[in-house]
Length: 221
Ligand code: DX5
Ligand code: ZN
Image (cartoon, rainbow, N blue to C red; front, side, top):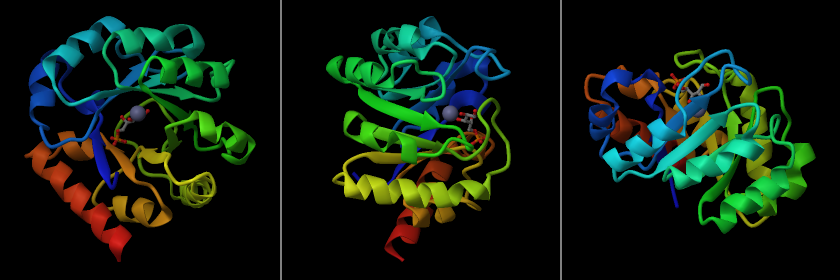
């Protein structure tokens, strides 16, 4: 699949989300940060808002569920039109059942890990997954500095993915910018969420193109 850039709308203007997603036509996905004020200390949107957003853009949506009960709520985001749903393994009570439900509904099943959560205990789940998200900040807020301590885990996750056939996408999220994307690409990430870097740029779509070029060059170099 190659390198993909998925802007997060967490730092976009919430009063004009339709216009904000229209500013990134070159994005591969739109990353929608769903927060419930319990799993993380911040509150964003629910399925009704996500459904409205999915009607406003032809770019596919990935819902990043930072919520306490993804087992119960994930399918609402499938119904809302998301093509990928990312649940936190720290919150999921039955991650295998949840991943299978998502896949049988025809969407990508994506499992997220907070910075202190290791990948190794979840190796046996990899055949159930389409994407692994390695968080590179503590989830909850946009604009936080990238945590370099996550780089070894990105490398180890890439090695496990290769051992399982190499089809799973390896996503990183948090503090991704022109200053940090190359490190992540070299460590083996191939899908890059970027919030403040994209939406604080004068031309967000040009930033998407720039980030993609940096990651592609880091991989081929
Ligand atoms: C953090 C969110 C991220 C965040 C990314 O909890 O999951 O998606 O919005 O924003 P930046 O790129 O600004 O770290
Ligand atoms: Zn996110």
